[in-house]
Structure formats: structure tokens, C-alpha cells
Image (cartoon, rainbow, N blue to C red; front, side):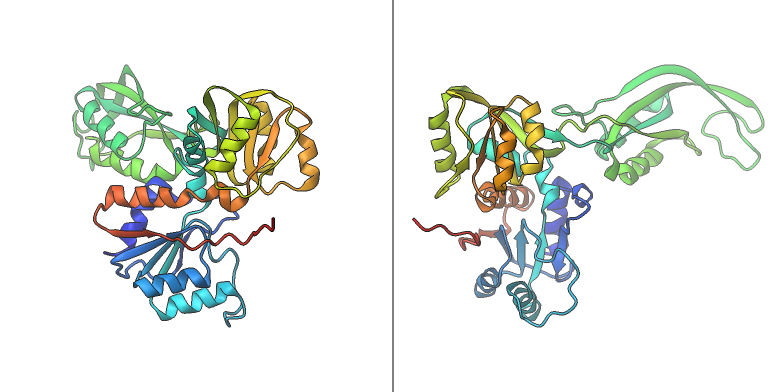
Length: 365
């Protein structure tokens, strides 16, 4: 199978346009046109991971963390990353990473954390702003169903758990066709009034070209009148982190034990336990210390994440319990996400979840 088909399936769910500006998600090594009969799924790409792919003849590695974050001035094999790149190229192995773009989607990394803990009523912790746009257009009454269905199919009309969301009002449009026009209705040179619907819907900005193309293809007019507005609404289901609720209030020490067991932590770090029971839980896979204020503002009892520094623990200030479970531990189930996304599209494509532990942090007991 073409590697570009596997990547397209992933990016249909987690578009590259959603990644943070500093990130480097996407194809790291290889060609989109290469063929692969199987793929290895991993959290990190190391030389050992590439060796694993070589031994199993996997021609594609799908990772969460990019192998290349910044430009490389040379590739001489002096680091593990450089050796991994050299081996991948020599063995015609492509390497693809989906990082922050799979962090921010609904049912992404943090949502999977919440699901593993059995939480309910899950929502996004820090919803993204500036991602939504509104389409307004004017459609003849007899063509509204065709146009509506086309733009919905192209990715418009989604609000949270709802799709096909739009609004329409009846009105009358006017136009006069010039000598070179080919009007769908009306006559050249004559002012024409047409009963139309004003149709409006929203769409994510990265889908704009698809939505406009669908509109123009479905609309009967030679010249289509439409407006695109940037809106400030937060995207209801796109952003970092997740919030959920325990099925019932749980004794705090018991919930901490559940966290440790669920994420297979050898140790967890946490602030003072100043609540006997907890029910509202916030979490963010990976380095989440900068989102502590959002977790506090959400009135969560606990904030589960990783990579808190010593002085940052003071910022909890008895308003929330910080639980630092480790970076690798918080993101380990991302491999399952990749597996499900690809198999939902290509059920017979061979996938392996790597059993190589790439966690660079070790503990001595």
C-alpha cells in the first residue's frame, strides 16, 4: 500500500494544520509514494525502534514524537537520532509523526487518558480560538438541499457532538446578467429577482478550500456570492487537555492508586492531598504545567500531567492536586490511537505496536 494512503487516513482525523507552530509533525524520512506492507507504531523513534522495523521488514514507522524537531546541519551518526535516520534511509523505511495535531483532537491523547481512567462527560480542557470560520451564501430555493449536503460533506457544519449544523432564512436576491454571461435564471440585460435562501454554517479554517470548492461545484449560479468570516468562538472539541468526572466521588488516595495502576507508573509525584474525595479530573498528556491555571479555573480536583518543575508545584496553592505521572506514562496510549485510526480505514493492513520501551527516564528503588 502507498504510504501516502496511510498518512491520509491519519491526517483526516488529525490534520497537520492543527499542530502547534513550533511542532514538526508530518513525514520525517522517506517518500509518500513508497510502498509498505506493514507499519510499526511507537511513541518515540530511536535507533532500537528502527532496528525493530528492519528485523520485521516494516517500511513505515508511525510515531507520536517527531524524530526531527529542528533543522539538521549534518547527519554523521554521532547521535541516536542521526543513526536512526541513516538506518531508515539505508533500509528504505519511512518515518511519520503526528504530535500536537493528535493531542488537540476530540478523542485524542488526553481524551484517551480520561477514558482509561473510566471518566465520564469528557470535554476539552483548553479549547482553541481562531480556528473557526463562517460561510454565508445565497442559494435558489430549489437548490438549497444540494448545496447544503455538499458543504457538509466537505467538512462544514460540525459543532461538538452535532453535525449538519446551519441556519437559513428566506429572502430575495437581485442581479442583471451581462452580454457575456450565461445565467442560470433570468435574461441577459434584464434585472432579475430570485427567491433565495441565505445559508450560513461554520467550518474549521483548514477545511476552507474543500468547503469553497464543494460550494462552487454544487451551486447552480455562474457567479456564486458568498462571504467568509473569521469568528472568535472557541472550537468546542479542539484543544489541549481533557476534563472528566469519576462515576461517583472517590476517596483521593484510592484515586491516586488508580492513576498509578492505570498508567503503569513506578512512582508518581503530587502536591499536598488537601481533599478527602475527588470527582472532577483534568489531564493533559505530555508537558502540561503551563495549563495549570486552566485546570484550576475548571474547578478540577486533580490535574494529571507531566514535567512539572519543583517551584511549579507551589502554584497549586491548595486549589488543586497536581499529579505528575511522567511524560512517557501520560502518552503511552497514543499508540492505540494510531492503531485504531489506521485499522478503521484499512482493516487488513498489518500494524504492530512496538514493545520497545523508549522511556528515557528510569527509577532506582
